[in-house]
Image 1 (tube, rainbow, N blue to C red):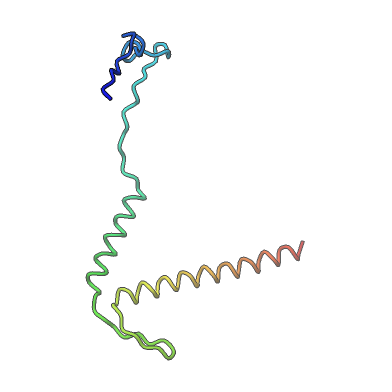
Image 2 (tube, rainbow, N blue to C red):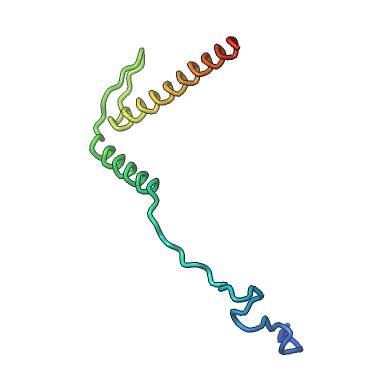
Length: 109
């Protein structure tokens, strides 16, 4: 199992001079990367921090009654669920209104 893995010809695996290339006088070293803070990342971090503070400050349980159902839950969860439900209903309403407008435009042409 002990095989000699050295090449028979010492120059067989020579890749040439280090750093040499066929690109002529152009440099082959990559340009230095400039690090910059993206505004979207900063905004996402600020929103995440605000949500963490919101959750920590609003951790008490509150009763929620909707039609015939009554449940208790943390205040932060109730507010977030209500906000998400409102956003979803707004999107659905916008889609329905937009669809009606497009149908009217097609009929009027």
